[in-house]
Amino acid sequence: MRATLYFAHDPMCSWCWGFRPTWEKIVKAVPENLTVRRILGGLAPDSDAPMPPEMRRYLQETWRNVQQRVPGTRFNFAFWEQCKPRRSTYPACRAVIAARRQFVQAEERMILAIQQAYYLEARNPSDVEVLIALAEESGLDTARFSADLGAAQTQTQLMEEIAFGRAIGVQGFPSLVLSHAGGYRLLNYDYNDPEVVLAQLV
Image 1 (cartoon, one colour):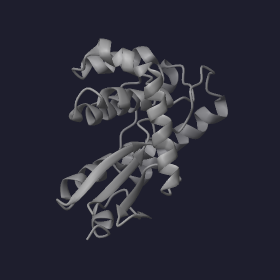
Image 2 (tube, rainbow, N blue to C red):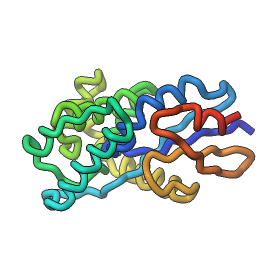
Image 3 (cartoon, helix red, strand yellow):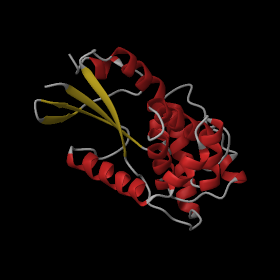
Image 4 (spheres, rainbow, N blue to C red):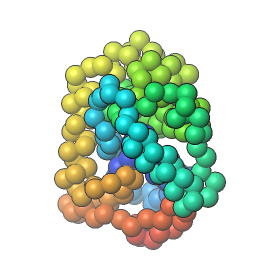
């Protein structure tokens, strides 16, 4: 039975952004007989409410913590002044699913576009218009993307991925779970050292 490495993430999770360089090294080095699959975590449901001041402070402190733990991780703190933050990551998660439907490489392309927009360009991926602009910039069919972004089946797919992640032991993001011989094992990882994960795949 072919083993699968599940990577549970949210495109608006700052720890996932910090983990990105190490994750890219892991993907390049996994054994050939291992399938890698991303699943979306859905940190925060849809909301039009402005983010409360205490949550804004908490997330800015989280960004600083990521920078300390993962040297070289960049954040543009102008986001907090130039945008109107909302605690809502489901739209960005649905954008990843909508991109995935167009072609295989579009999933990773959209994840990176959302992360760069949020963390480097002070753009808010909680806003549908931002997501559509990112789709266009990423070379996707924007009409199809817009339709898929708002489709009921996209929301259903997101909820199924969230439920599946919980069922296999995901409790936070990022999480890595190895599926082999019908069982699931949550892997340890290090934000700066891909070998911690790779050693568990042997």
